[in-house]
Length: 330
Image (cartoon, rainbow, N blue to C red; front, top):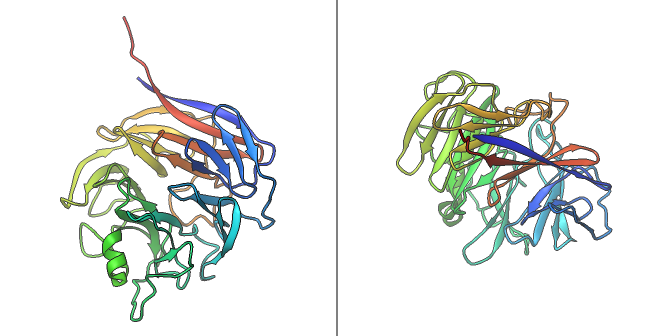
């Protein structure tokens, strides 16, 4: 039997943005670290702008703090200001800011975002500021890129964005191929068909599989189903209907998916059975990168190494969710 466990961390200075830094939770707006053991460490600085999200690089050196529905962000190195980051204003107040870190095999770190055009993905060298993929002749596909995620083996980039009018799409890109030829970023990525997948739900299961979900019927999946897409073999397998409401899957491990639509829940991806829920915890109704119409969109961040999810529940509380397994005896 699998059950969800919640640990509550009471905060004094939480500024609204949280990210995992190893096994601690970082509030990037004031560089406060919250340990799972209850410890708190703070440097003392505070960013005055109304930033409400942050992400952390693999090695923990770099943090990008930004406004989820704004055009502004700040890049930090070891807690010190590096430079300001911007995105185009076009519909910026409608959908989540596209941003992710990628560290190459040689140790160079890039910020993946859309600094030039809303539909143009780029890799920016965090140290030099050079946008290495901004070459002449780029012809981007008309996609509002959002909800970026790098695969567990650091080789693929997933985008869960949207196109007019509006339609959620899920795209996948080979990072090495895109750095070698940035025009590959303009071709819609890897897909099971011509063009990107019409999906808002996508989460890496492992190095070569993505969990897909359908909230509307389409050619790939029936309504309220999930399935596993092997993007190397180019097959979609094991479509199953989910036994409850879902729509915001934030992570998958050991065959169990975390979903935070309305409340925390865990789903068996082989059977579609909802294994446990925590319905007394409100998590918002996000099912897309388009969130302008939602009143409550808390920051929810997944730690793949620990299989934990942290959520900024209120102005002075962070909840950490874990899965426990027990065996019935008798």
